[in-house]
Image: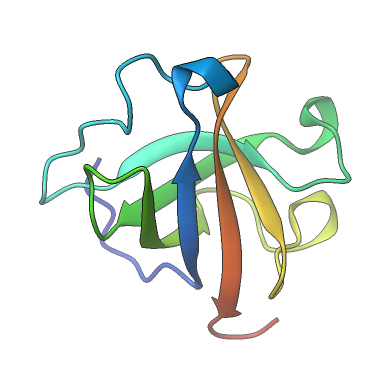
Length: 110
């Protein structure tokens, strides 16, 4: 997907290996001119209460671990979707956890 807006969360994405329950093909192949649309939630909220569309812009699209920017696609950064410095966002693919996004910086109002 091509997301034209700013992504307010900066941090690091860590993709899980197949042995850890992640994708068998490794990090998702995303064209250089596009961002990855996924779903995610913020613990301690469970997936059933906090799953929402999440956009990821990954610096090194072939690496298992890379700097990245992210943002919620539809929901506001509040309540069950609240992300702050130090948050770990669980990125999902279907019913599986496929990555963790560790937040180092939040731009804009918090």
